[in-house]
Length: 268
Image (cartoon, rainbow, N blue to C red; front, top):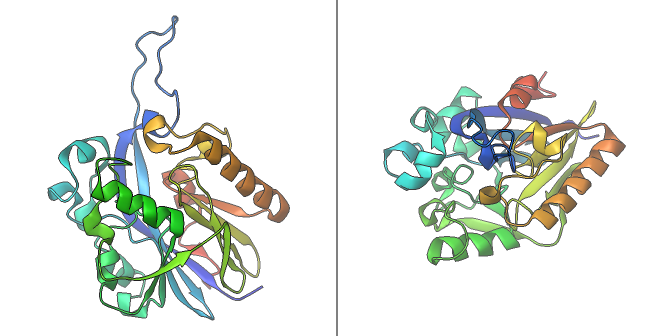
């Protein structure tokens, strides 16, 4: 296996109703017609993959002005990135010993506003920005019309970026580093399989926000689910890879799961 490392970057916390992440979580029943709503704290993260073929940045987090009018008020009231202003991409990279100029390529798992908010750091450069074809199309469709999803902001990605479009369901980005198309949450969500000397890391990303989505196979709530059928098919893909490899599975926003992996993998 290639001698690469994965360093996790903590990009802050989003507070939201668990019902958005777990379908039916707070639905009433005859026995409990008025269930309590559960507010949860979710992690936002990026990762730096230091590979012999280059240094790759996975996602760019939220824009630091998310809570200061950059995100639309109704959306921020639903998904509050409460400390976005404390997590500019440049600062979080610096804390891990990197700068944007060290990054050879960016992978955008998808273009929602909590994943694409730092792309401006690579505007006007020749740094490749990888995105799935279906995601790029849907992001522009959503941001530029009244259709699609409100979770895309044109100001995040409608920039002079060196897009590298990923087609089909798998793309080898570097040795033992494979991108996986995992539609469901959005049309073009990407995860990854990264084979390290001692272990395999399987990036589920927002296919699975939290462990209940993966282990319990509870779909995302309707507001976060583009296609339930595709979501289940993507979950089968992840679980089959995990079964064959014994991989560590990294979810999109599960704070406890994220913290359980410390600073990352193969960092010594």
